[in-house]
Length: 272
Image 1 (tube, one colour):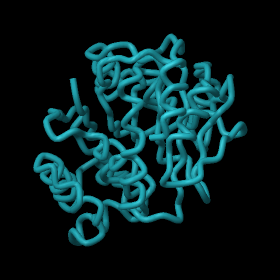
Image 2 (image 1 turned 30 degrees about the vertical axis):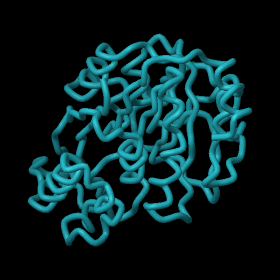
Image 3 (image 1 turned 180 degrees about the horizontal axis):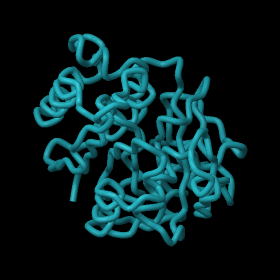
C-alpha cells in the first residue's frame, strides 16, 4: 500500500480491531422484503459484530469491463430484475455512499486501474442483504465491480489488496451464491439435485481446509462444480471473501441450505 494513501485513510477513518468478512448467499431478491430463515440469518449475523464505519460490497450483479468503485454521495437503489411484485420495485434503501472512501480504496489497489463510478448505485445483490442487516440505512455503502474479462485467480489477488479496510472499521461483503444455476431450477417440488449438494459440500470442504487455491480452479473440480457455476459472477464474490482470511482466523457457516434445486444460500463469516 502506498504510504500517502494509508495516511489519508487514517485521517478518514480511525484504526479499529479487524472487522469480520462475510460471504452472503443472496438468492431470490424477495428475501429483501420477506421475513424468512435467510433474512433472519443475515439480521442475526449483524448483531454479532461491531457496527461498521462503512460497507464495501462485491456483488454478483455488477459486472464490468475493467474495475470500478461507486463514488457518489447518494447511491440509487437499482431494481435490476423483472417479474416480481410491485412492492419489491417500490423498495428503497437510502444508505449514503462515501466518495472519499472510494477514492482512497482506488489509490491503494495496484492490481488494476480502478475507475470511480457515479452512475451505478446499489444493485439487489447488495441492498437485498445489507438492508436486512442494517435496516436503518445509516451506514455508508460502496460497491466494487467484477471485471468479467479476468480469471478467478486475478480476482483473488485483487481482493487481498482490500485487507487494510478491515482495520478501518469497514465491513467487506461478498454477495453471490456458491451454487447458482437458474437454467436448472426445480420449479416443481424444491427437491435439491444431488450434484448441487455435492458441489456445495465440495466447496465447503476446501474452505474448511484453507485450500483456496483449489477453489480458484473451480472449473477443474468435476462435473458438479461445472453445473453449480455455469457462469462465474455468483461464485467470484466468495473468492473476494476468502482472500481476506488470515491463517489463524476462524470461520463459520450459516444459512447453509439449498433451495429450488440448484441455488445455495450458504453464507460464511470470517473473523470475530
